[in-house]
Length: 404
Image (tube, rainbow, N blue to C red; front, side, top):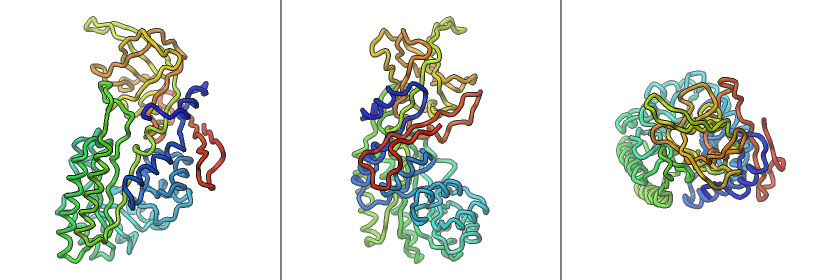
């Protein structure tokens, strides 16, 4: 359910204080859906999406490994009990010390996208496996991720040739089609690009054994900046990925394994924030227009960092009916960026909403904890609660864990 499970909504209703609530059973079920849609594909959860201990434990028990971007994330991943072989260093940006620390922790799989990085991995993690990230244009995604990471197909051939010559294992290729990717065509183009590079590598005697499909799988519960439902073609995306994988396997005589690095797909719709209204106001601007503003107890700096690219669904449980006013939604800080886009991001808000009334922010389970500041303007990070999973494997933790 894009509006949150009954269990999640019951927990929001029961909470008298602001907090994030995660539905561990919902996360496990989402993982099971993913491995059912992409059979045989290994899952490496993108930890940055939700570095919450109980969430990581839930995914590890379900069978996931981890995509880590720093030695600290690697330590977090290994603390779940997964073997080091189920964790890779997925960040192409890393210092000599980062590489050495990861190698010391047992990591032997490293992402790369430059010849300079390959030389550093060879020096500080000798004999390791490296997979080269190909650039994508990011078209169709809310966040394209097209500038900071990835190299051209020509560079990928050079990078993996250097890796072989430096005593590393040129193990694979990876892509990332952009976060919250809304088109199946982006996946088709990425898989085609991977196939082209694999074909160029064969005459050089380089036959990677792994393709990393990266992140980008979309969550279902968001609204766009104008408040319209985002409706990703998830079924079509999975179909295109399955077709592309089979084509690459056929071209490689079956000698390819596949990884995927989901983040928001697994956790976004399984988390929600219990916030409250700080104030609903109306004031006239310099153009003479009177506009309503809803100031929430959380915003960009404490839970809703992505509010400049999307809208979260808001539920007003104590005001199930109108009348409504169209309001700009903003956070509580003294910072003008802490608000939805003013011109077209208006939200229907109950006119009778009063200071202190609860407001539920749905589909906010991704990036809420990781992007939260440590107390900008004195607004503390939100505490969180993880709801129990009654069908969790035997190694599940306590019945319910709350963290402040």
